[in-house]
Length: 360
Image (cartoon, rainbow, N blue to C red; front, side, top):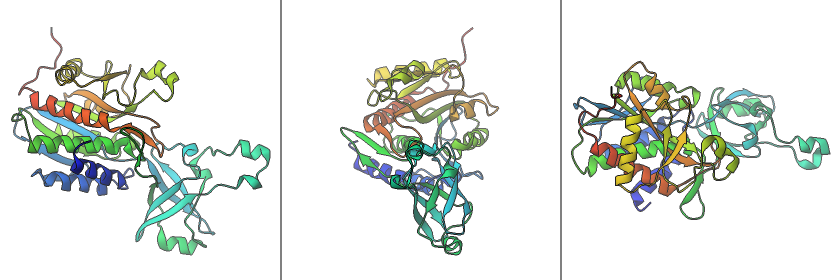
C-alpha cells in the first residue's frame, strides 16, 4: 500500500477493540477519518455508522461492512479471582489455548491469559487431550488473588478479545486478529474517502456507507440498516475463505489464493447483472478477480440486505483470508488495494438508473 495515511488508518483501526455489541471505538475512528474529507457521519439507534454522498440521487447504493469481531463476555468470577468467559460470536476454543486476552474493564483495558496446565503435571493421556472443547473450559488469569480484587477491575458482562496485533509477513502479507471484518470496514471507509476527495466524475447514485454492528451474532445490524436505508443496490464487503493453505477446501470453496485479487460471490442468491457489472469493471481496470460459488445464502450481510423486505439487488465482494476466526487471520494487502480500486471504478461508473432486473 503506497498511501501512508491510509495504511496508518488501517493499523489504528485493527488495533481497536470492537467485539460484537461494542464496536463504537472503531466506528468513531472511521467517522473521524471521513470527516477530514468533509463527509458527515451519524449513528442510528442500533449503533450502525452511516455516511452518504450525493444523497438526493434517486438510486441508492448501500456499501456495507460489518465492524464487529468475535470475542468473549465475562460470565463468572470465581473465589480465587479467575475469570470465566463465554463466546461472543464464533470462537473455536482450540485456537485460543495459551493466548493473551484483553478485557474492557471498569477503568480501562485489563490484560490476562488463558491459563493452561503445565505438561509436566499431566499424565500421557491428559496430554493427548490438551486442547479444550469449550471456551468455558479455560480460566482467564488477570493476576487477581480474590474475587473481590477481580471485581474492582472487571464487571460481569464485560467484553474481551484475544490480544493479538498486526504482524508483517513476507511480501505484502500481514496477520492480525479481527481482520474479519475490520478490513471490510477499512475498505468501505477508504473507498468513500477517495470518492469524496478525488472523484473521476460526479456520482450518479446516492452512496450510503454503512459500518454495521453485530454481524457475528446473526446479521443483526445489516438488516436494521437496510430497513432504514432501503437501498436499490446492496454490496457487502466481507472476508472470504482462501483455500491455498488447505487445498482440500478447494472442493467446496474453489481455488482462492492470497494475492489473486478480490473474491466475487457467485450463485443464485446474488444478482447476476450486478455481478456482471462488477466483472466488466474489473476487466476494464485490469483487476484480477476470483469467484467463489455458493448454492444458497451464506452468513454475510448480503443476505441481510436482500431479506430486509425491500427490492434490493445484492452482491458480495470479499477479501481472501486465511485462518478465519483465529488470532492470526492473514491476508495480502494487494487484494485490499485492488478491492478499493474496483469499488471506486464501479461506483463512479454506475449510471443514474442501472438496469438490474431480469430481461423478458
